[in-house]
Image (tube, rainbow over all chains, first blue to last red):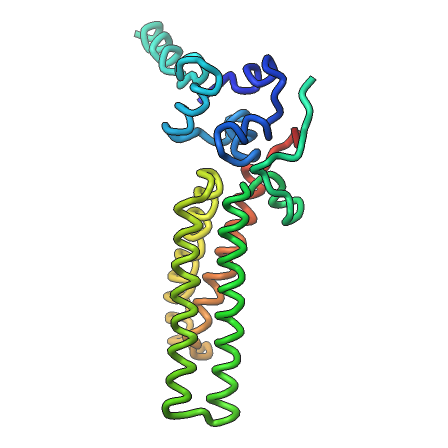
Length: 75
Length: 153
């Protein structure tokens, strides 16, 4: 799942550790999410959305729309 | 400009492998588990010596065995508490490591049962436990490596 965490964090001048503190997880968790190695749980995704003041779908992109476009194009 | 600072929640006390992995809560829970596990291991060694070397049988022997059991149960409870409260990525790493350790010990045990029938020496009851612990530790190392940050940012 793609996400905009790194960009959103950079806009606010937060380090990974800063963001980790705000959502009560480890810095490695934030790093793993940013690099796409780990997809957060729903509670953590909501916590991240709340911290940035955005809707979850503006931060995380499950790629459904791209899949749908591909499916329609191939039909 | 983004800067890397020491976090209030990210704990860096356990070297490069754990850099930024443990929150303070996780570090504290892990410390409690480690202390009790060490006490349990020492109690096991002391009880074994007392029973085997110094002939502590009867009530004393049973008291030592029961004390060892109780410490082990406390260590187990503390590990479950640690897992339940752990940062979700750390929990994932530990659960995967537990799966690896459990699976490896079962596979090893059944494999060696076949080997015994082919003439290999008989397996001691502790051997699969050692395999489990080794693979559990290896699983944690692999998990920490897999999810480790590349940039260190």
